[in-house]
Image 1: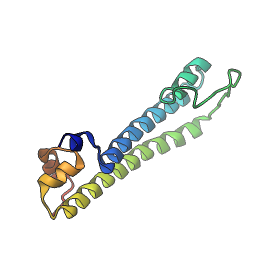
Image 2: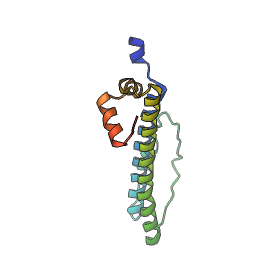
Image 3: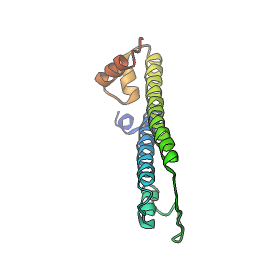
Image 4: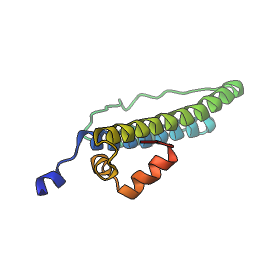
Length: 140
């Protein structure tokens, strides 16, 4: 039984990776949006490199020291960027919610509607599963 507890299911791992990716993408979008909003303010190369290598230790992502790119954005483009940024965040979160809903439905189907087994498969508590079933209006 101890080996079972140590073993992480593929589904559980995928679930965690998706949430980490969402977090990383939201951080990146925020940084880019902040940089675009403050286009008159210089962002140092060191700050940029620190952001780029945050999760890529040991030099996986190498940036030459003399690489500097200046970006100029017109006010009209700024409005378009804001519209895109807002819609992208909404679309991404809906996509993640859809994946979560799909995973719950598949787990319930796999265990013939047995919520305790489905919750264990998903790596969540039964209470959380009940809440998600109600939230997504899943009938099983």
